[in-house]
Amino acid sequence: MYLALWSPALFNFGVNVAQDKENGCLALKKLSPMPSIAYVLAKSSTALCFSAVITLLLFSLGLLFAEVSLSLSQWLQLFCIALLGTLPFCLLGLFLGLSVPSKGAPATVNLVYLPMSLCSGLWMPINLFPEFLQHFAWIFPSFHLSQLGLEVIDASQGYPAPWHIGYLVVFSLLFVFLTSKQMQKQ
Image (cartoon, rainbow, N blue to C red; front, side, top):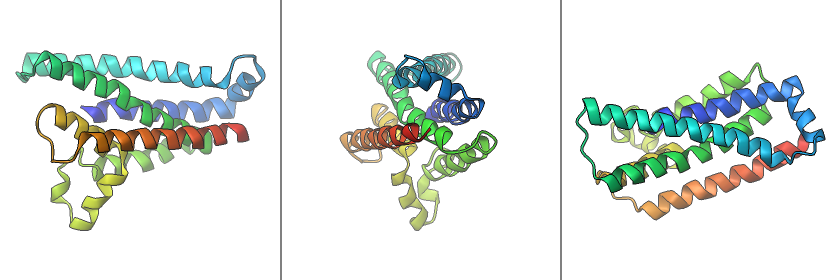
């Protein structure tokens, strides 16, 4: 489920911001009285709305066709994780969009997206990988986001939820810093 949520956030920011940068829209927005953070918040709001719609659609499909039975509390927790979990990927996409030219943005985002999806256990369980590859999952935010979701449905792999939350917060703060530096260069 989370793969369907963070990939649009990553691609939306990565590709669209690179195009805005190349078209001169970012330079124009810097000259306007609008604060730079308003641009980021508007794009983030769009990604969050899109994530909310996807989540509700996936929940509906799960209820109607897959007979998923969770408590209301579990549904709400998964929904909150989905929405808040979109933000680190928005920031990563924003950084990528600011860092690469628009023609190279789709390829660059794919070079981040595909290994992150595969190595974090979203396509197949990481215990099927060779042992040295299993450790790569820990560096990807997608792994930590999926572990939080597994915790909610009592399918945890035994890792503490606060550790995963802390990682996602640190990851987000790192990309806030890197993005702000990159925006200053523009």
